Length: 415
Image (tube, rainbow, N blue to C red):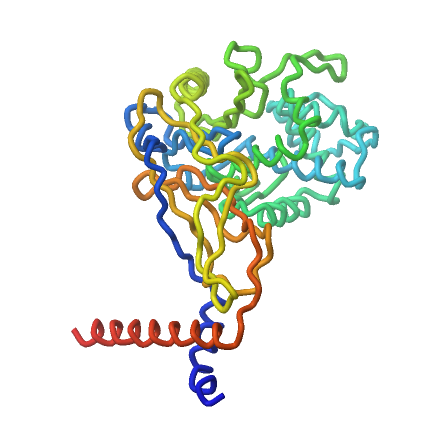
């Protein structure tokens, strides 16, 4: 008991360290594979100022250029408007046949008088939600987006608060919205979003609402006796594109979020900062075709295959083995088969007891300092809490590590 009393400070220190979390990386060998990620994109240049291209099936980042820099999303902000509407439909808070009013504000700001993308809904008319969604997804209609926002939250300002709250819930930290449409506000404010977060939001929409996502590829839409073809310029081109939204901002240029499928493989792309609509269309086609043609899929681990193991503090066993729930696959540039570097990363120390099947780590596939794929890993066995002597031993080890660490810090400070 006296020994345990001396070790209690180490246990207290360990608990505090565990509470704030330390990211620990364990290198593993996957030597028969090739380097991947943005470095292999060095041989592929894009004229877009911002770009992010991901293979949705494997999560491999094929291209990243200033992808975390927030820019004005313009019409791409409508993706969050749609996500909130889709979520409400999925959870029974909104129905497709429900009608919403097109207010004078929606009509004047986003309708025919505004000379922007519109579905030409009449002022004070009522429109079914299904048609408002088509107005947004097929025609990028600003009046439809504003009607959705006002109908769901009472005002655009209140709906923008919902958009920002939803962005935080989805972990989209760069996103900030000022209205439902993405149009500039009275003071010129347009919000912000990074290409990475726009791709994350798109993947979430495709995975969570596949049936509603299909509206994006409808070739035309007629409302108020006005027939309009799909305003997305990549729909119908022979690149497999089936959504989403082009955008333009007077200060930062032309952008787009697009997704395409070829032979079961889906790519998701966000670009921004192109000089005109022609350059945008050319760059989107080029990037999507390169993504489909320039890579091959390589399996690193089978589903359930042991990827590695990490340490457990205070357990009956000192380590626990990890695996992926699905096959762990990445895309590699064709013709390259050198060595992939991968690391198991987790917030630790991992404290016993540990349940079997718990997701406790990720496998990070890296190219230099850039993470190009991140795959969740789960425990394939449980680890119960260890006996008193095992916990005492772990506390003693932690105490020694803490003393050494403190000595190093003191020596560094003395220099």
